[in-house]
Amino acid sequence: MDPLTAAGTFATIVGLLSNFKAERSGTELTEFTTWLKEKHYEEVAGAIERNSILSQELSNILATNHSLLVERLSQLDNRIAQLASQFEGFGSLANALNSKPPLSEQAISVLEQLVKSGAEYFMERKVFTGDPDEYLLIGGTGGKLRYSDRRFIKDDLDSLVSAALVRLDVTSKGSRKFFVTRAAAEFFK
Image 1 (cartoon, rainbow, N blue to C red):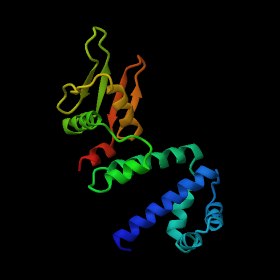
Image 2 (cartoon, rainbow, N blue to C red):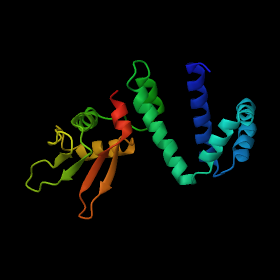
Image 3 (cartoon, rainbow, N blue to C red):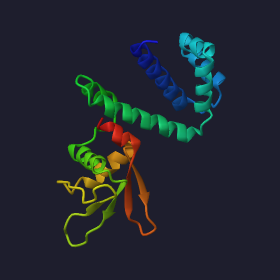
């Protein structure tokens, strides 16, 4: 299958799977293919039924806990939109279709500092003196993250977590740790 057809087929199936899970909580492949036929996607349903590998993979996906699968589909949508926004001509389309705002320049800068430092994570250090909070890079070259707009740093960090570019962990003392993800490293390739 040529790359353009493969990309289109993948996008179609993921989109239809998202629509199915938005309407129903079915976990069986037959429920999905029946739904496809009801929605007049007989050709897609037939292709799934004829391809045993595709059928097995979709069965595995559908067997996933409903809320977990919906979360994964949402993360996939976010990542595709973030990736598309980096390509000329597709950024506006991705922004128009994706209801979530794109990452700010500050969020991208924070992510780039984390990835380039080689750190495993950065840790939030609250400063109660009126100075901006600090974010310490742990591992790699170490140091502190630089950011310019302290009003929106927490919003930017939340955006990175929502886009699954960093993973949030909270220590027993309530400090937040932001771990680099593979997706973050891929973001800058």
